[in-house]
Image 1: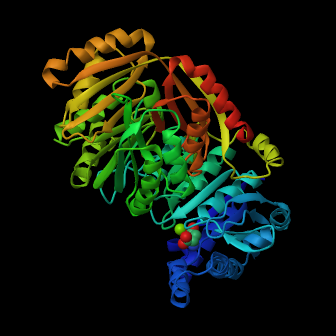
Image 2 (image 1 turned 90 degrees about the vertical axis):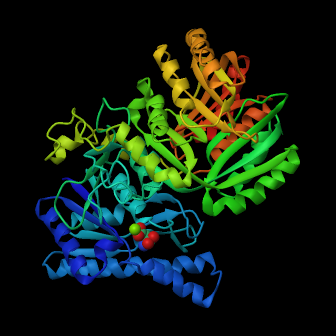
Length: 600
Ligand code: ASP
Ligand code: MG
């Protein structure tokens, strides 16, 4: 018998009418012959109100008591939902996280799910009940109530769908689906028919507020198909599955992270271990770092730049100051007036000329790029916050995101089956049986540690910091037919100049150098250097960014092996570090050892 998990967010259960409407959706699915589990959030802004109450009696409420309080919000809504179903003449039973047996760790207010027992759920479902499960909560080993972090009901829903081997997890919300970018910022944004897990993970961590990040990690890990849709209509929403929407277009979505800040350490001794010193401290503070760029040092010194969420700037600066003293950096500078514009797409890993199109679009809009980082499926550019919206519009337009990709069949009215397009949970049984042995469902999982020793690096020093320069460089390299892999543009202490590094296949090195040097007169950069053999070391898996310590662990392992890191980039699914080609194999061994405990 098929099983569906339906999740209703706070706005979809904000009052009694809405609860009844949600109950009708559950009943209808039940009538259609599905077993139904409904996961519910607290009504409306209830969780916020509870937090306000707590602060009135204690400015810093103990986390355990906070969870005791916050979990009551969902307890109210599940009971009402069960009553609403009962009033429609169907059997329903509401269950708290503890009653279901959702076991978590003990980190109150941000607990992670360890395991879920399915016995009670199965009994109730088999007895013909609609099960109404409280989202966002669990219990730890000692039966303390825990919560999963704000927005955590999504994670409960996908986790229940995973352990029950559900055919589909429906997320009912106040938007129609997932858009190519935030439609409140760009009205021309388009609702997608389908998006892949990896793309959704990137967009979610870039601030596309549609779903709780950790829920997508679950979905990917246990191959749960998700349907994000409006609770106000019956229209198709967006499916989050294995397959991207288009197998042709390089970019599926764009995102703007406006509250970003940049920190730069100038004049850091370029020896193994300095990055570890800095980033392990930041990871300990659970501050998530993005756009981490280390430029290739002149005279034995390097500059390290990275971005953090603006609200973490102060905490990050305090941490970095300590680290800077320890490693002997010359100076720390920062900028709190920046924003990050990113494009995401699974297909860009296989196409050339994607980055230069983005840079050209920004150049045409007269927008200066302050920093660049790329990963296999994402390109980010740091720009002045004032130009952020124009930057987003420019990149959204250049990749024609407002248009329906022409390889989608019947985009105007796809059926669920069509939208799923081969992404049905074919391995569901296999996944569920694998789950029996999983002791810790949300643990970081590493799929692969790999060495790519086919690449070379080109670095351009003293690049003028003005609109259009990166576009020129990568257009001419693309015209030479070269497939560029990693790109970083760093920030310098020096005014009006930046550094630009990229990696290319070794047999394209000469062509890349020629294309780059030819621009020298026009762009008046200071010089081009290169390394004919670099090694790219990658760790891939699930949860690489929500577990902030992955980058630090890599830096640590490489530092202990005495290996200097030349370039890095990070994404949700992969962290890459470029090191000297001669040290590739040693680096691989060091990383394999460091992550051995996390392999699945
Ligand atoms: N009620 C919780 C919150 O407001 C959980 C959720 O809505 O997903 O964060
Ligand atoms: Mg919510």
